[in-house]
Image 1 (cartoon, rainbow, N blue to C red):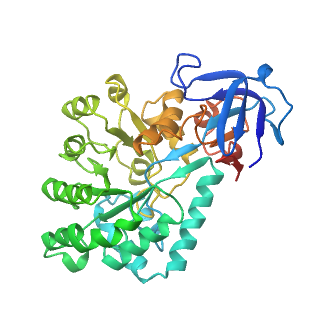
Image 2: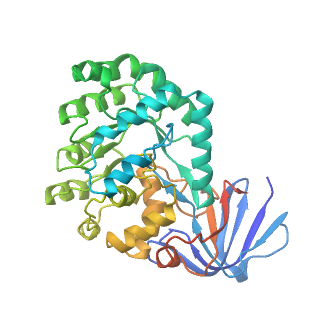
Image 3: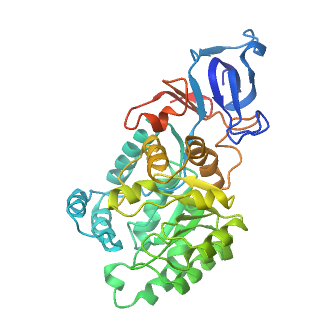
Length: 390
């Protein structure tokens, strides 16, 4: 792989606080060097010798940021739920039940249909700056369909999550405990080769706290790592369970108490906020300032799915977080990059330091603030992943 110099960077966001004493680790008038897909040097532009490079890129004084790490998505599905969205915008409430319509379409789709749709969404995400994307199952809810969903997902990312516990499928409506047993037994055995994580939708209309513990513990016993949907639709025990089981992340956290904040602040569990879900369901926006005040590590993610957040654009998520969730532009960018990496327990992505993966974007502007300042505008000029322009 070519040794590459990216020079004349007006503002480089490294997320390495040793650079300037701030979480974003900003270097002005910077350069970086890529060797074999990794960062081998970062520093002032005037210290970068321009010889001995097979390839050179001029950033033209633009801003360079780490690639977005989208740590929560559901892109293995068929069809859409645009009519449901239309109805919701006219006043109907959101509930977990709409998932079942996507389940029916996904079960009847071919593998190629599911792969083509996922490729389409992944290409959207890449073009808008996402370089790492976590992908969940959860629209199959049979042994066969969950396994094939994860097999497809594993061809697209190493961050694959088994979400057989998305909702109880129709055929088990009168026997939810029977479905929990299926998840913990044969289904888990079949999906294990394709999954890194296990997740549960612990909320109203989905799975109870006791069911959640049982499923997560079964996954942990099989070698999968825990994360979970928690407190999206109402207050509950999801955050408590996540901290108790050392989950990498609890996601949504739309209804969060002072006790939940205390638990998270004394844990290794990241709170992942999904602004697209609130936007698409007309739900109340969370004031994230209490979480930041408690020094909780926060990630931002798209929650890309056909029902409650059909966006793959992390620039939009950043703009929403700043406008409605009281993030600063700096907090939002960190949470969409380094925070997302922490939610996946990854040290090799989400920041630009020696030895990390060369995943970054060159913006069309001189400042990352424009990501929130100019919502709805494509601000990505180039996207690089593992040292290759994509």
